[in-house]
Every structure is written in C-alpha cells, then in structure tokens.
Amino acid sequence: MDVLTDNFSTFGKGFVGTVELTVYASILALVLGFVMASFRVAPVGSFRAFGTAWVTVLRNTPLTLLFFAVLLGLPRFGLVLPFKVFAVIALGCYTSAFICEALRSGINTVPRGQGEAARSLGMTFGQTLSTVVLPQAFRSVIPPVGSTLIALAKNSAIAGAFSVTELLGTYKTLSELGYNIIWTFVWIAVGYLIITLAISAVFNVLEKRWGVAR
Amino acid sequence: MAVDPLIELRDVNKYYGKLHVLQDINLTVGKGEVVVVIGPSGSGKSTLCRTINRLETIQSGAIALDGQPLPEEGRALATLRADVGMVFQSFNLFAHKTVLQNVSLAPVKVRGRKKDDAERRSRELLDRVGLATQADKYPAQLSGGQQQRVAIARALAMEPKVMLFDEPTSALDPEMINEVLEVMQGLARDGMTMVVVTHEMGFARSAANRVVFMADGRIVEDRAPEDFFGNPESDRAKDFLSKILKH
Image 1 (cartoon, chains in turn brown, green):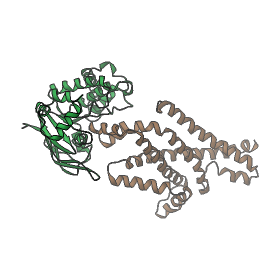
Image 2 (image 1 turned 30 degrees about the vertical axis):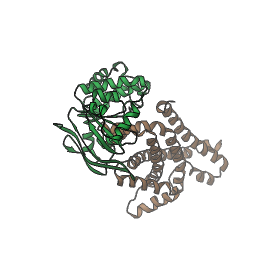
Image 3 (image 1 turned 180 degrees about the vertical axis):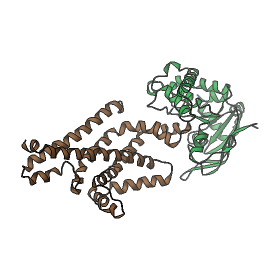
Image 4 (image 1 turned 135 degrees about the horizontal axis):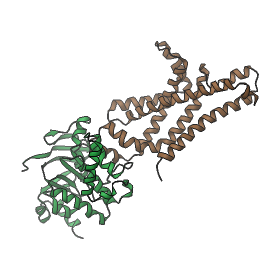
C-alpha cells in the first residue's frame, strides 16, 4: 500500500498520461476509421482501393514497428513533433484500421434495400450513408468498437518505451527507488482496470440506449 | 404512338457474368401511361424496372428519362432519381425512422423543404393511402400491406414524374394485396405515369394501358391488355397465360 500512497503523484501522472493517450488516439481512430469505412464502401474505385490499402498496411504491421516508423521515420522527413503527438498518431492510425473494419461489418448488416431505397429517393452517396445506413450500422458495431478501444488503451503502454509519460512506465522510476515490483505492478494493473472498465461502462450505456432491440 | 415519351429504352443489353438478362430491349413509356410488365420468374422484368433509375447498370444501349440520358453515378444521377419514385417488393422502409419520418426525410434532405411543410405534406399523403393514424409508429409495427402503402406515400412525397413498382404485392399476404392495388389504381386514375412489374393479372387488365410480356430477357409482346389477355400472339405468352389463369 505504501507504494501507492508514497508515490501518488507519480502514479497520477502516469495515469493521466495513459488517459490522454487513450482519449486522443480514440478520437483520431474513430474519425479516421469512419472516413476509411466510407472509402471502402464508396462507389468510386480509387477511394475503395485507398481504404483497402490503409487497412491492409496498418492492421498487418506490428504496433511497435509502427511506433518506430512514426517516431523515428517522420522526423527524417522534417516532421518534428512532441513524442506524445507522435504516439497519438501511431496509436490512432493503427486502431483506425480495426475501427474501419468493425464499422464496415456493421454497414454490411444493413440490408441492401435500405441503401437502394435511399438512393432511389434521390439521396447522394453521402446522405444515404449518413442518414440511413450508418445510423442502423451504428447499433450493431457498439460492442466491437468498445473492444477495439479497450485494446487501444492497453496498447498505449508501448508509448512508454518511447519516453512518453504513461502508466506502465512508472514502474521504472519506482523500481529504481527500491519499491516492491509486484505491488507496483498490481497498482498499475488497477490503473488500467479503471480505464478499461470505464470504457466498458460507457459502451454498455451506449448499447442499452442505442443497441439493436431483440 | 405515345405523344410525349417519358421513358425511352433503346437497344438495352445487360449481362450478369455470362447470363444475358436483358436482350435488345426497346421500350417507350409515354406521359400518363400505365405499363404493366409481366412474365415468368427470371425473365428480366425486375431487372428492366431497376435499370430505369440505374439501380442496375447496363452494358450497352441507351436509357433516357424525360429526354435526358441517364447520367453516371453522382449528383446528377441523384437529382434525376428524385423525380423517379420507386416501390420495392420488400418495402425497404427505413427501419430506424417512424412512418412520418420515412415519408418526410427525402423532401427535407433532397428537395430542401422546411421540416414543418414536409411533415404537413407527408401527413396528407399518409391520409391518402389510409394511414394517417399510423404516422408515429415504426415500420416493424405495421403489417406488410401498411408498410407498402407507406412506401408508396414515401415515393409520392418527392412528387415524381414517374413511379416504378417492382413486384409491389409479391411479398404480401393475399388479404393485403387489395389495399395496395387500390392505392395503385387510384394513382393510375389520377394520371401518374407508372411502370409496374407484377403477377397481378387483375390489375393488369383493369389499370394498364399496355401490357409488356417478357421471357428470357426479351420483350415478347407489347400490347393493349384486352388484346394480350384475349388473344396472345406468341406461344410463350399462351403457355404462360394457360398456366396462371387455369386456377
């Protein structure tokens, strides 16, 4: 217990760091995933190809490798940003591929006739997607999107290896100070649980409110 | 023969892979005409109906609506589709919207009407199809016949120049077919231009100006209903009619 009470501010900083990474990367992943899912069902072939390439590359790259590529690669092209921003970009882009596929599977659960009816009324592709297809797809993608964001929260630990302040990284400081490593990890695990259970809770509420009625 | 052609198909061909589903289709529908398309399953009649607003693309030939050739996918096509009402076999009402929202959605989104105006007009249309009291229900709470009448009201809300019906009664219980056909008959009387793919021979006899008989992707006969039913020319049509009119 001493580990926590003595070092509350260290834990606190790490916790806030992980929360920030999770929130910002989630927003980026949701926005990009939404755009890419739209691309993948677009009537224009080049959009579909771009969306497919995006998903294939990002989903099949190990996240650590992607962190190296973003944090060490982008500065070589003259793009220098704080490591934290780089970490958000890497996490967000990586997760967007999974969000995209979850959304696309949701889109595929909406009967074809819904889109046809909307188009036959004169709605454009964008209107059909945003007012008819996605609101119905949304209901069935709540659980998989929740899982993906929980995975994102835990994946954020990799950022610690690139000297971004986050929860897992606090163990280095504390073990140097001679605290019991087991208890340190227990409290770190509790911190992650708080975050992931909070995400679960939010998605449970969303599902109750918007999920498919059975 | 039609004074003012609204739909023109010229030498239209369509393939699904190797299957030649529409073969050299030529068809003209004049303003105010009611054309009923009948034929055996797989004859291409639904596909023909769906090519008219480009829900199905064609490989060769030309389709024109009100003198304008069908544009490629995009905004121009959407604008043109707004003038072509379509009613589907499976209703395709928007499941997440109420009946009233189903009818008023496109007038607001596509025509840019004010919400109040669109809703007032939608209630009038629902009244016309006998469903004024169901406005706030969801499609799943209605019977098939009611859903199809909502679908007709939804199409009418766009004030289309022409209405396409793709087997509108095929998914309905027998006792619900009449309520839908009555609405369609009313539309025909009011002078709406209609293309109706159906198996309802009674409707073809009473409401159609012309009957188009299709088989194996071709138009075999295109005649007035009394001529077609009284004296079919082709063996294929005789065979078809003898099978369906026997019982």
